[in-house]
Length: 63
Image (cartoon, rainbow, N blue to C red; front, side, top):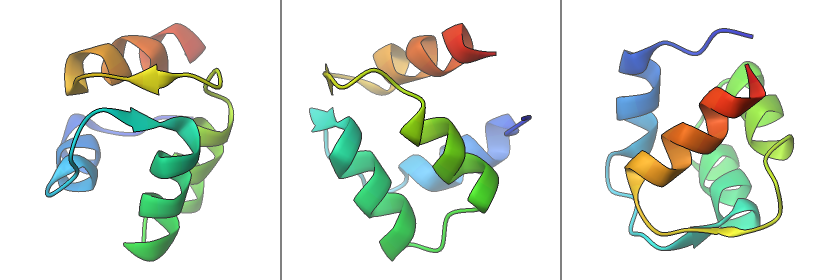
């Protein structure tokens, strides 16, 4: 699954941190995120992410 940097930046626009995995999934669903991005978010560990960098690190660990 390849989500581009542009898709990731568009997804994060307007999102306030810290966020949980469930918050991210809900945000994705409510804001028309791609199925591919939704699958990535569901694969994240159930934890809170305090910054976009921390979230990006967790997503990169899934690749």
